Length: 469
Ligand code: NAI
Image (tube, rainbow, N blue to C red; front, side, top):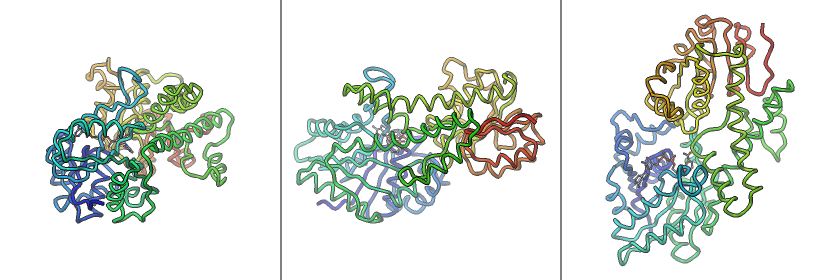
């Protein structure tokens, strides 16, 4: 098998960036170049003060050690392709917005364009690894495109190597992955290519990775669907807890003791977000429908619907609790990222909540420790495409701290489980708010009893509302 010396990664996003930065760190003998068409993103990766385009705990340290040594970021996609002997394709695969399968199927346009670029530019043989989450048999399409457009004496071996990292813990996940799956054709060339990639991972991952036929791609959709299903199940139970007087935290804790269920991923919340869960489930729904399995499709679709319901239910609870109207009232939303320890806002529940508050004509103050102001405006504009940005800006203020966001507010809504929200000076917050002062904990983050002692009226997801005091 070929010994890999130069790697190129197409796509410098949440997956390509951290994954290949860690490969560079762990394999100092391999030159790793991450390329992207987005110049602003590449400039940020190269910024002298390490103001990287994405936030992940530990990422800056990795980039600091490897950048300029054997890790490079560039917009010269063609040069990256030409030099490399192994190429990761880590471009985005969003849900299709129009055409067949709109709203469900993955948009493979970016994968195809990147593949065609490889075919056009390559003058020597390459191992091409698809890392993006793509439907089964995409590797076959990639192979057809590459073979139909390649030069003589160029051969392409296609591997499938889905990424299982979770945002917020990407670096820890990459340092010690639960599993590394590599799929290849079961020909001698395919098995050799797989071995070459295995040797890259062998620099730090114990050799428990598997070479499998390419069809196993569905594993990733299935894994994300199962994870999201757990959250929707627990969230469905949280609604029952609120109605019956039970406490979802205690219920989840108790059922987690059952070793068949296990304690992880059982936390009720205002709803899951992120770029993968919804997209991958919708993909699975589409796949089920294409296979004429409407009951299976309906089952998985319900996981997404429960998530939408959870968000709607939460914003309705805010309105109900604030005496059935929030018109003209100031609401502080703490957290905008879809979860803690990331600056990623894709499908964040906060966006839906804020849109709901806006349509009730509330005034909204937002604070998030990592998300840029520009990103917040972009997301709010996308959520209300008909409202001019100026109108949105009349209703929404972005603040520099949690304390600033809470000043003169009627209610505080915790939308992301940032640890720093636990340690806010809640006495000072209380003093600066209008009374009665309300807190809505959408993430089971804060100590409700402690806040009640200060004077707050606290509403927690998965617990019945306490009577007003
Ligand atoms: P992203 O949107 O952050 O990054 C993709 C990058 O690819 C963008 O910067 C874009 O400019 C670039 N790009 C697109 N076409 C290109 C081309 N032809 N040439 C050069 N650059 C190009 O996406 P993200 O989150 O990194 O996801 C990538 C893939 O990994 C997706 O398929 C996603 O489903 C999958 N995935 C994502 C995970 C996550 O936690 N975000 C986890 C596991 C898989």
